[in-house]
Image (cartoon, rainbow, N blue to C red; front, side):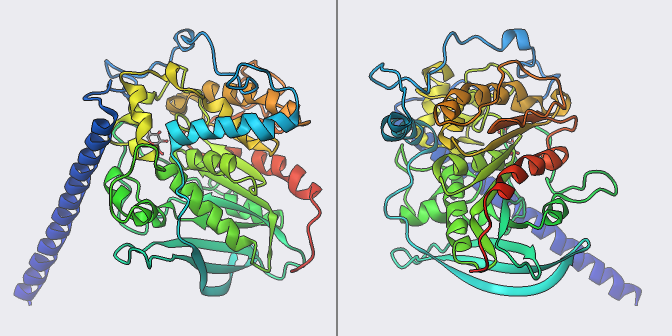
Length: 466
Ligand code: GCU
């Protein structure tokens, strides 16, 4: 018996060891392929090196700046209301017809990359459906798969993973808040190159006994959905030759202005919205998008590019999201352009970490917020103690500097350019901001976002069942 136990234990140990080894080898090859692809992008750009980014560890000798007096070294920001020809935009018509397309083109070409025109169609399939309850709320949960037509390149298949939870027996079409979820269908999420501590899950309850964000949403009579980003596009450079980006490129590397992972994730969110337009329980005119950290970046990119999204909850998105790139505080362009994160962007973006700088970017994050106008956006940050990497003030300022565009379109901006004390809810306008006392999480801001969203969701007449 003893022998049997020790043989079984031995086998288990060997099995665990080989799994561990396999995972390590897998990580190594991801790293290697990523570095090759990063190098290839640099070759296409004609550059051989980029500046290293600062460290996310506050005690490191090269720690990122967290001193406000050193943050503003730029002397000017691009003006969202000045056309490329130098003329000022004074009418909503010129914004829509001329200026917004100019800004969008610059984000496409230099930052997030272009979505190809020939992205194949997605067919949504209901995988399963069941009645259940979430806390005290009876719900119906639908598991859905967005099957991307891969007939042009069958060796890559993409199946978008979406779960929709709506109140059971709802009489009217419900609003839905969709989150870019952290669930990973294919292995662990590779860590970023920075020394940033691991990301917290956003669905943690408010307190030891507080309701989860899902329960808070259900309490309003709304539904929620979880979209799995990794089912659309992997979160590393090695994955750029597969996923939706690789499928369109038939397994070849990207061109310099091809879409990066953030736009691919946002594209997936748009396909989910296509599905909501067909679901009998959902009001497609009241779909919110939420994401946190890298998925906060994806959430604002989604909001900016797809005007069907009604509202955005952009949590701790930091650099590459709602934070002004020109601010020297927390994460910098150099971090984003490194091999751990460049895949989020177009290849063209790398050049801003050498020879160019963040001041050479033709647009800045306030113009990404402006692209969301006139739709409401809630910009969320954690406290400096634990979330200074995302630069709360840099995100606040992007909202404040986007406000003139909201005002031009007849809406209310942030109402101030004065950075508010922590826990102040700036939610009277259509660009909202709040810094909570927690760390790198959306958690404590959920009730305030819901309060903000209610204003819009309640104001829009919900249509009767389809
Ligand atoms: C790193 C990265 C951030 C990103 C974060 C995340 O910290 O530098 O830009 O938002 O990872 O986990 O998403």
